[in-house]
Length: 155
Image (cartoon, rainbow, N blue to C red; front, side, top):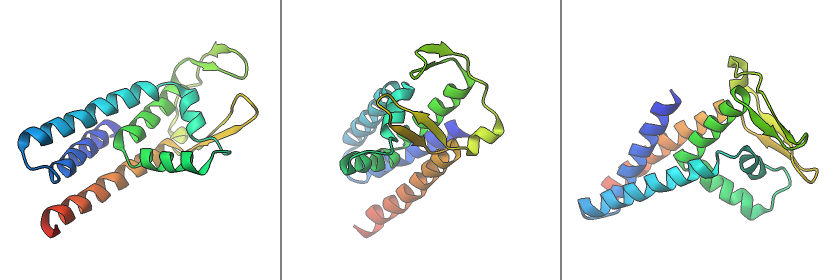
């Protein structure tokens, strides 16, 4: 379900971008740029510590604003859900202990639990549950559809 949601959201985002450009060539180039940014973001967010720093409780307001922008980009929500599942199901590095440990496995109940983690320096990170991230992805789809209709018919 997550892959289909991500696929649908990225396609709708490409359609949204195509409403702002005049030629097929420009729309294809813009959509490809969004896809490349999604790939780079996926590599960047594959590190669980980076995702944890994005959800640090003691952040500056401008970083919270960037997190809000990231939340409205489908690739961020996809990468976060994927990273949440990998953190539970696979081996991961525990920064507080300083070694690799095996994950307990991803259970159905983990889909709805927020993830709290201690960060280096004594800060605490509270990441939203994978279900919330998938809900954000669904909201992105709905918002993009409304924007496509508005920009295509009204403007």
